[in-house]
Image (cartoon, rainbow, N blue to C red):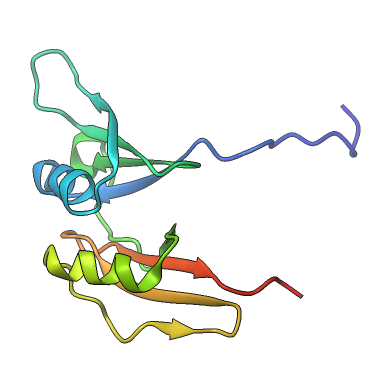
Length: 132
C-alpha cells in the first residue's frame, strides 16, 4: 500500500457510554425520536447496547460496565443535524430536554447544547451559511 491510498473511507458509528441502558434507549428513541436499529444481547443476559440511526451516522449506546469500560460521559458534543433549529429545540424542550444556554450563532451555524441522562454532551446543529 502506498502513502496516497486512503485507508479510512468513512465512520460507521460513534459509541456513547451509558450507566442506564433503559433510560438511554428511552432518551435516544423516544425523546430524540431516533430509529432504533439494533440491540446488543448476550444470550439471556440483559442488553448491553443499542444502535440508533441519525441518517448518516449510527449512535451506538453501550452500557459501559457491561463491556468492561469505565464510565465517563462524553465532554465534547456530538452535533446532531436539524433542518429547523427553532422548531427542533422547542420540540425537545417540550419533551423535557434542558439546554445549557441560548442557541448560539457562530456566523455560519446555529448550535444548541444539551445532555443526555448520563451527562453526555450533545448539540443540535444547523449550518445557515456556506463555509469560506
